[in-house]
Length: 118
Image (cartoon, rainbow, N blue to C red; front, side):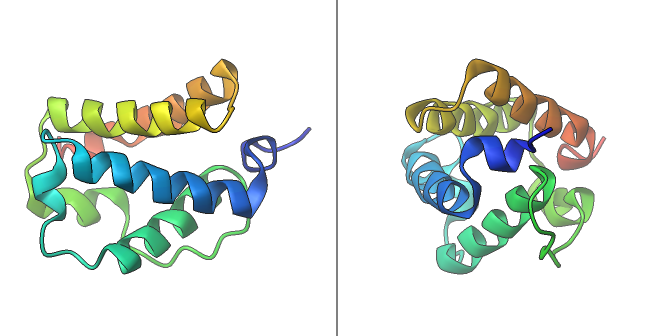
């Protein structure tokens, strides 16, 4: 059985998806403020490693767990939803199937409480 990582197109696809995703995030007034004064190159590199790992690709992620990474942000449900929406739209643009986008949403939902510090 192929992994989600393989079905989405592997490293090149994840790299492209993260770049497009952050363009959307930075243009989204609901969440762009959380990324001010952030090194977006470093952020994108971390995100690429994290998504590669959770999608079933090579595990080179060495960052914090989701609770510790987001605790200082005081995120609300609307912020979480905006991020998931931007990611889903990015993957759809890149030709991901609705089933694979649904699987990505399930992965996000599995860490939602940690991200929202509940």
